[in-house]
Length: 269
Image (cartoon, rainbow, N blue to C red; front, side, top):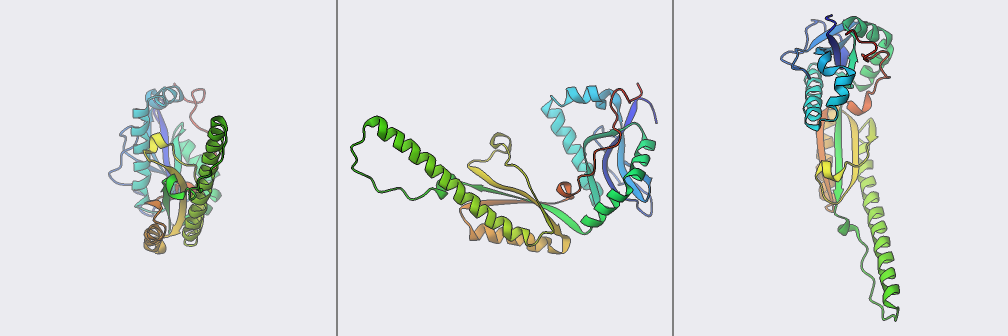
């Protein structure tokens, strides 16, 4: 391998019988994607220039949100494309090795883990479900007005306390409803993963996100799962449900930390 290049990993899959790489896929550096095989496994990889993808360069690039978004999209585009050829284990963004030989050694080292993971997610796909609510829909009924003779300051404090209590009640009610939705969806899944709510500024939504989960669903139940999401949306009109997928099983295949990544002190100059 050229010393000015490193090997960027996208995913691991079972070695295909024909040994051909995913067709018409280009990676984060517009490089052709290929397969590196060992131990009955194949890593979906590309060769990227260290001038742009070494640790120092990456550290600078990660401050550039436009570059980061574009490159992350390219990384996931390769994973999704490879998944059309068979089950894959997605690898984290910016997983780099010195060269293909180091990738082969990694596949040999982690053969048992990767093989077990591929077996566990075989014929299963990830679906994402988010739930949003308007807090006003879950507020308690207003109390009857009172004829108290509190001072203005006391009345203000009482109103503020009541507002906080109302918000807490609304959040509790919305969360309970989201848990009911999750329980119904989880019944069709073999595994679930909960994620924190997305930032409102980044995700551009109003109100509260009360559910942001992933579900590993057997492929045979994919249509039933999406139909259930639609049914739950009708059953609980105060909740807006959003389903995405099918995806490679990003949330259910996290491999161990790479044995060796291409850090500057390890990377040939």
